[in-house]
Image (cartoon, rainbow, N blue to C red; front, top):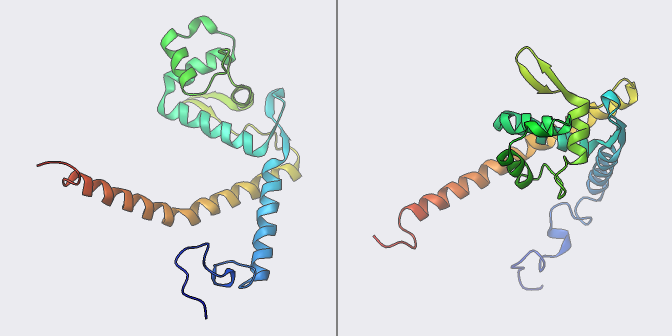
Length: 187
C-alpha cells in the first residue's frame, strides 16, 4: 500500500469526487448537461428594435451590466444613454471619464457595441423611470424556450453556489476581524 496522499495531485483518481473511477455515469451526465448549457449560451439570437443579433451569454451579461449601472449610478446611465442616442454634448467630461474608467466605452471613446445594442433593444422609459427590459426578440417560441431554459439553469447554478459563497464570506469576515484585533499591528 502506498503512503497516504497529502495533496490533490497525489490523491489517486478513484478517491477524487466525480472521477471516472467513482461515477462514470454521473460524470457523463454532468458533462452532457454542461455541454448543452454551453451550447445554449453560445446561441446567436435576434435583438428587439432592429438592434442586430447577439450571443445569449453576451446579451445577458450586457443586460446585467446596464441594469447595475442604472441601479447604482443613474446619472452615469443617463450619460451612457445620451452617448448611445448621439447626444454627446449632454455628457460632462467627468461622466465621460467615469464611463471610460468603468469599461463602458471603447478606447476611442465610443460606447461598447454590446452595450449599445442592448440599450437600443431593451431600454424603455416607464412611469416609474427608465428600465432595461428583455432585449432579446423572443417571438420565436423555440428561442423563447431556449432562453427560459438557460435562465432557469443559471438561477439554479446561483442557488447551488450560495452556500459556498456564504462560507467564503464568513471566512473572509473572520479573517478581517482577526486583523482588526491586532494581527500584525502594534498596540
